[in-house]
Image 1 (cartoon, rainbow, N blue to C red):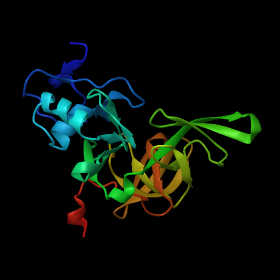
Image 2: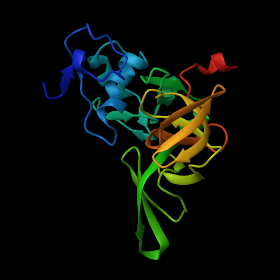
Image 3: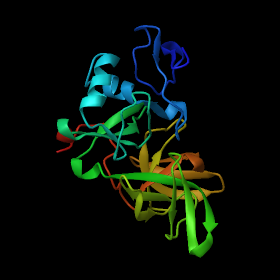
Image 4: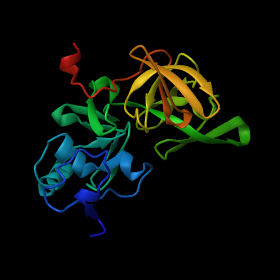
Length: 235
């Protein structure tokens, strides 16, 4: 059962029925750790409720255009990770995988206009000839650019070609999303960075966390929809 794992042993970030059946589909290895990603088939079935069985998911992937970060996917085991965009244009379904306030993977409904954009964090970089820089990103992708940015900054990327549209610096006043830890899934405004620790303000409260958990999502406010609320509930 190398393509499956026991439901009871699956990551706590997965919102699934752990008593239903014994196994659940394991995603192919990807740029995200297992606790921050799920198999596309599970996302389509359990989070989007577009089918009730994996057999139906197979049919959906063959008959309809299902895009992850702007590229068509036909493998139900493909990993969908944190902040990836899932689009089924024919069904007018557009979502982004995020964390809720309990640190669990959920889908944020997004407008179609956001389905060609995503945010990713720079985790490493290296200089290349000709003044170019290779950025290694949070989701495992690598891009080459002439943009000036630091490790810890985030990039707004155009999909599917991964063009750098904007640099979001990791600096005081930035809008940040917590990707791990006790406050994973919360958002706030960065107040201070001291060494490996940081303080951000959320709902009027100062919260301390590890600097590595910070993910910049906007200069002053989020650039994109990152809440699990439905768009209709936000109006």
